[in-house]
Structures are given as structure tokens and as C-alpha cells.
Length: 224
Image 1 (tube, helix red, strand yellow):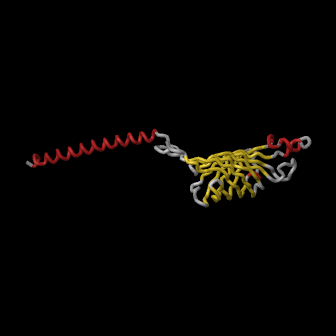
Image 2: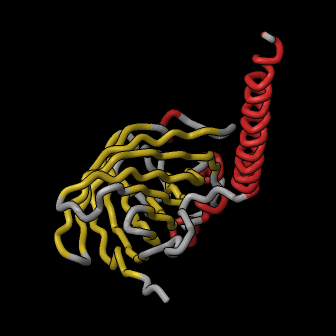
């Protein structure tokens, strides 16, 4: 009697177990398909979806002056702005002191680089920006200058084309002020590190910089 009375309970437990396993299998299969789909999708920096990946763009030119352990330098940055946060462009900085003289006690150098920057809160009146320059540092070679006949190199920049070079990376931090919709002032500090066989201590150092960005920064892209 006890075995007969407990049989319905065992059948009920078995049916619940089978139903639970079936539901779990269905759930896991759906989850596996979702994870498999997510794994096959390419992850991107700018999210896609219904809205476009790039919602706004801009273009600016920024003349700047840099001063510090590398000596006074001047140059500029031409940059494309994306989503009012990211900047990508080209930059150039060159020594100001004795720049057009053949013989000098100062190490003349220039820095041609890819320029990147991230500005998280560009719409605030005063905000921070995090620039990064990656490129090539070229500097004069005294042996080449000593062998040059006459002042020819003064006019054709012979020492730049035939000098030595090193890889350079220059991270920094700037404070920016939105003076106008199309004008931003900035000032900050950075450190340039030179790497390579032709690296010299004079190529690395801490600098401050001031500059002016002129252009449009947040041109909206119309959705279609």
C-alpha cells in the first residue's frame, strides 16, 4: 500500500524534473545563440545601431607655442573632430631659437607627428583635454654641418633632410576655454620621450604649451 500510495508522488516529481530540464535546455540554447551572435559581431569604438556612429564632426587649426626643457618651439595642429570628443590630425613643432642659423650651440629639432586627443566635456566653459602626439623627431647632425661648403644649407634646410632622427611620443594634458563657438584657448603641460638608436637626452623633456584652436567643432550630422 505504501508503494502504491507513493507512486503518484514519484511520477509527479519525475514530471517536474523533466519539465525543468526541458525549460533549462531551451533557455540555455537561446542564451547560447545570443552569446554566439554577440561573439560574431565586431566591437567598435563608436556604437552603431539606429543612430549613426558619428553624430557630429568638425575641423580646426591650432597654432601653438611650446616652452620648457626642449627649448622654445612653435608649430601647429590640423585636426578632424568627431562627436565633439575625439580629435585626429597632423602636427608639427620646430625649434625657434637659432632656427635659421647653420652653427649654433643649441640642438635644433623638429617633431612631425600624428596628433590624437580626447575631450570628454567639450561643451563646458572650461574643460580638460588629453592630447597625444606620436611621430618622428629630426635634429641636426654636427658632422654633416661641419662638412657643408658655405652657407648653402641655411637656405635649403639641408641639415633637416640629412640629419638624424628618433621616434617620439608626447602625451599631455590641457585646460581649454571656450572663448567663442569657433574659438578655443588652451594651455597645458606635456612630456616628450625619444626612443631609438639616435636618441639623445636633449630630445626628451617636460614642456608647457599655449595655443589657440580656430574652426568648427560640433557640426551635427542630419539623420535620414
